[in-house]
Amino acid sequence: MTADAPRPGRRRGTGNSRATILDSARKLFAEQGYDATSMRAIARDAGVDSALVHHYFRDKDELFVSCIELPADPESVLAAVARTVPEVRGETLLRAVLGLWESSAQPALIALLRGAVSSAPNAELLRQVLTKRIIAALLTDLAGNAADRQLRGALAASALIGLLMTRYILKLEPLVSASGEEVISLLAPTLQHYLTGNFPRSPSPA
Amino acid sequence: MTADAPRPGRRRGTGNSRATILDSARKLFAEQGYDATSMRAIARDAGVDSALVHHYFRDKDELFVSCIELPADPESVLAAVARTVPEVRGETLLRAVLGLWESSAQPALIALLRGAVSSAPNAELLRQVLTKRIIAALLTDLAGNAADRQLRGALAASALIGLLMTRYILKLEPLVSASGEEVISLLAPTLQHYLTGNFPRSPSPA
DNA sequence: GGATTAATTCATCAACTGATGAATTCCAAG
DNA sequence: CTTGGAATTCATCAGTTGATGAATTAATCC
Image (cartoon, rainbow over all chains, first blue to last red):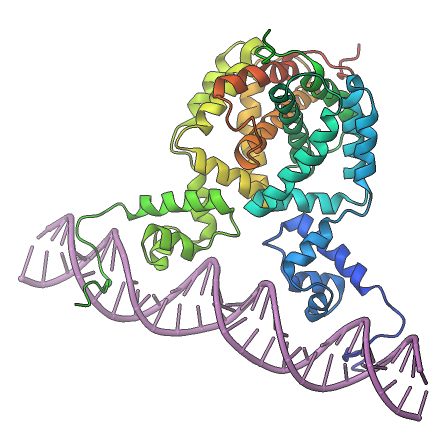
């Protein structure tokens, strides 16, 4: 008996601990948020000593941002969105974003969203991503003065964030169980209207 | 000297410690979220020993939900919304919700929203409030079968949550600086469309 | 005025947190 | 075979957290 008392030292074959740790961290950060997730819990979930986590990632913050570095390449996806004609960009953006969120990047994205809400610096991070990347892609080649464009971008962002919150955080039915295409067909008109429709008090004098 | 060494025991006049604690708690929960706010920090902010906080509120959870119990009376506000004709309910709801969020209840509401995102049980709390109260009021006397109504309610909730997130948490311009009336005129059509408009694949066969 | 009750603080607990340094074991280069 | 580095765990630290029970002071009731 007394089969396995795990002694220290390097293991035989397995050289994937770092990746395992990252997976566990993404999962737990996504499920419970930044504060509520302890280094020890991550280590436990990864089947590893907590000191090993610190061996690969200096501290909790570094581990968190390492989780956020997306596995996929959202940059090119957004560039593709920017290249479509503005008249269908609502649907295109929705399809791209939902594609990302249904991919293996989901835990990282949920972690990003969760983090943004629970701490001010992380909120700044998300705001940057939102304005400098997503909204920027949305507004490419869009007509109108600066104020008008900024407003349209913010409204689109609000629709998008609302969807992500209800579908992935609050898990409000029937938005959770709906297929991606259903969601797209429901929300694309709204997004498109924000981008290219005309408003009650849209600041376009002259 | 050694002027003031605060000794234990009841104080002279001041009988408002409980309210002071609640104010500090609302403020800190709103600023930093549930996890990041410690009982001790609340006590310090209220100028009080941390044991006194436990004297009035059994534990941190009870304090949190006490913070959420709104100072105003949103029940009657929502009832008023439910009494309007469905055709203007989008605007009415928006006006009511924004009124609440611009009132003294704001810290409590931000705390509720922050809490929902950072922990699953608190998410359940917000989901309950959302479905049993807000969405319920929205759907009063609305035509359609159950599935259709549930979908419309969820979409309206997503638009609402998106607005609250961008305006009060992420602080995305120009939605932050816009006046309440501007926001209403921008979003009311969307909400109204979700409630009473017709959809691409609205499940109304026959 | 004596007894009861409420308000307040002190001292303290066990649990958990993130983090560090030293030890152990293995792999790979020379 | 030796030597250096990488992977891994152990033991431990100081700090914080939520919570409790006892002590102290004041207000209130009779």
